[in-house]
Image 1 (tube, rainbow over the protein chains, first blue to last red):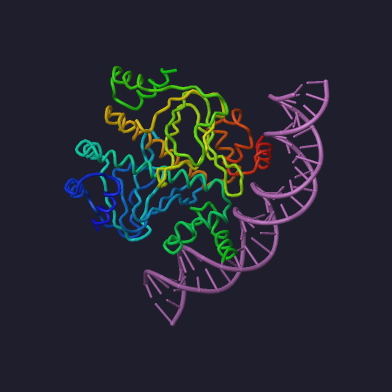
Image 2: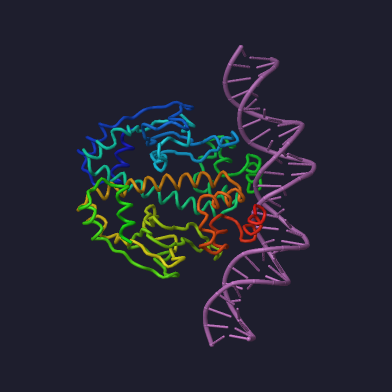
Amino acid sequence: MKDILYKYMSRWTSLNEEDQQIIVNEIRIEEFTKGTVLFRQGVIPTACYFILEGCVRQYSINEDGREVTSNFYTEEQAIAIFNHHKPDKSSDYTFVCAEDSVMVVGDLDLEKDMYHKHPQLESMTRRMMEQNFSQVQEEFAAFIASSPEERVKTLLMKRPSLIDRVPQHQLASYLGITPESLSRIKKRIQ
Amino acid sequence: MKDILYKYMSRWTSLNEEDQQIIVNEIRIEEFTKGTVLFRQGVIPTACYFILEGCVRQYSINEDGREVTSNFYTEEQAIAIFNHHKPDKSSDYTFVCAEDSVMVVGDLDLEKDMYHKHPQLESMTRRMMEQNFSQVQEEFAAFIASSPEERVKTLLMKRPSLIDRVPQHQLASYLGITPESLSRIKKRIQ
DNA sequence: CTCGTCTATTGACTTAAGTCAATGCAAGGT
DNA sequence: ACCTTGCATTGACTTAAGTCAATAGACGAG
């Protein structure tokens, strides 16, 4: 499992193998069963996560009590940015494992120390985040400009496996449409 | 104009006034007239920007030749994340001044040097970006979950000045609806 | 001042998605 | 094996947004 991590880190840092090992050894890897809640809407998260295997769904309960899915995270994706813009830093979302999953778990209270001990780590984090950010912005722009049907097609192109991995009504919510519409769009586009 | 910058930096760093001055003195502040293009879709950006005054519109031309507005940046917003996820780093968007504007201009090729010279700057950048990122994610989640009419209401709430600052058909595009619909929605909600 | 261009509004019509309700299906529990 | 529960599909109907076209106002150029 750690080899995924080494492969990933090599893409992002110029650290030599030795230094990488030191960092990886300080890292906690945990397994979670499907349905495990990482943290709930309203609480202040104490950890961040990097998915090595599995799938995590991000959702919230809106004013009229409906569940709104806002993201799915899968292999090699980080769950690390939550409500830094809110004064109290509490999460607006609940994160729950949609499958049995294996993740790197990073303690947020150790973050500063880690950056201090390994200055290259802050740099790596920043660049990962930039990449991540730019991807989200692109997705957002594409979402704005497309119809429900186009959004379904795009998802089928870009993340075909999601369809089989998560319940359809959650996918519908993630696409901003009703489950009925998703069902009909699927039929329409075969 | 630089006082806006000092105020802003104080919110983000623990640098003393002296160090702030050193950094601010290395910084380039430029004025742009309405219509000035910062950089075009397809080219690799060489600078990043921080708006002190004015408004910048981000748009792209899609496959069928239509102009799609994907963002408006105004005072105290940074234009700094472009296509770090694409191998060639070329911009998918054109950035154009929607008003006469004053901005901090940061050379991207000096970025590394600056971070090396002022380690706290990388830290500050990272935290600004985290905040920014988390805000975009929240907006995205809200966008997904709301109807065109709700999106208009939300925009009127959160950025009321935009309505007067930019042409309505660009706003419509930014909201993912047609200009006709925006006109009707406005009438509907008075 | 007038012309031309660009933009916002309005109307008539179409269409895709939402809503509500019924049915069917599969998985899990007893 | 049965029942329950939750999910996907389908149908009938409503509605809001899209499309196309016409009009009218604002603005700048000449």
